[in-house]
Image (cartoon, rainbow, N blue to C red; front, side):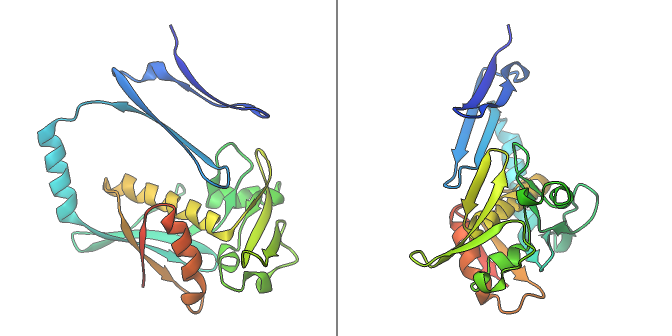
Length: 233
């Protein structure tokens, strides 16, 4: 017998289906998160009793070797690095490069970040968000570009800019910190994959962007949604 977990939406129908038979365990954990911008995150993972000695050894090893992590932002890309035993290690993207283009596409069921998102711009420009550092600066509305395929508006009552764009599920509107939230979440996932450690604090550095004060508010707002502490370098 095949057991499946199905996630559906009233208008769109089935969104995601997961075959539960692939989990060889007695219990599983299903985590579903939905943020204020209606972006969802579904995770299904097995629950298995860990071997105490192995867990202890791994915790001690991580604590001793992994020191800190940092994300560097420029106008066009971001890069991720961490220090292990005093040595700086830069995370590579799927193509083996050390830089991730600052592009996010929403033309598929799950958002895509980096080079793959940049490639979508040619065919489906209204589904792609870029120039993120301009969008998340304090004076974003003054930096509007007539060539942007997305729409930028300003809400006087909230004293905040909003971006309107197309997604897999229709037209959406979100504040700039929503996109920084996705970038930070993406980076944390890669850092955890590389180090085996969940970071509660990371360093943020800006290069070629002028004063960091122009971006701190947006980044801090995004980090709060992740319970993440940022240190601006």
